[in-house]
Image (cartoon, rainbow, N blue to C red; front, top):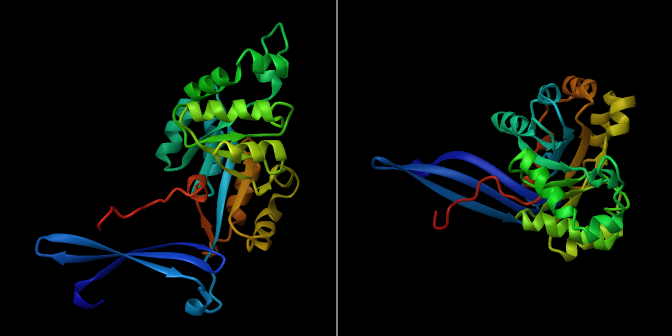
Length: 278
């Protein structure tokens, strides 16, 4: 480039045909290296690139991670991933390994009624709410895993599909200063509306691959590729499906048509943001 500018990095955030491209350049100024950032806003990327499309953004979410063997199996994919930690003994050690792999950890919440039951009694939804069990349950789960990016509500049940209990769940999350929450693939009006009303940054799983992992893992990538033109994908896999992980690693075409991202980026967190004034 002219005047000694060196190109260093390109990133983008394009939704459909509209979005932004960011470019980073460097230029030597005496003994210093100055960074210069350029933002290009486009309203129709087709005019710039014609038929060239940016790679589809996809978040691989591995749910309910409980062992180091599961983590190792999924790491064979060699792409950015997000792991939902199962709150249990050893979860903090797993979180440290995830960080060493430069991956992302979330907390996979067990919000079934049985999670609030003592061995000699069964807690009803009324008991859970009146005795304020949700807040301590989420706090204890977080103490077991350590700090995480956000929470995952794993399934729809009597506790997660009523407005009163959903409000209590999201209030407990906000009390822990967490606003990112991943919801199940199947839509539930009470849960989704309450998340929006309570100003939780929420998204739903796009595809739950549990069944395909068990029956036909070789068909997963073709299935996702055929459906990748509809925006960002959040794809859920069960952590204990280790054979599925190995099959996915072998069948993944590394042709640049996928842009693998952690959940936080799909939720809107920027990986790199130039400092003000730069």
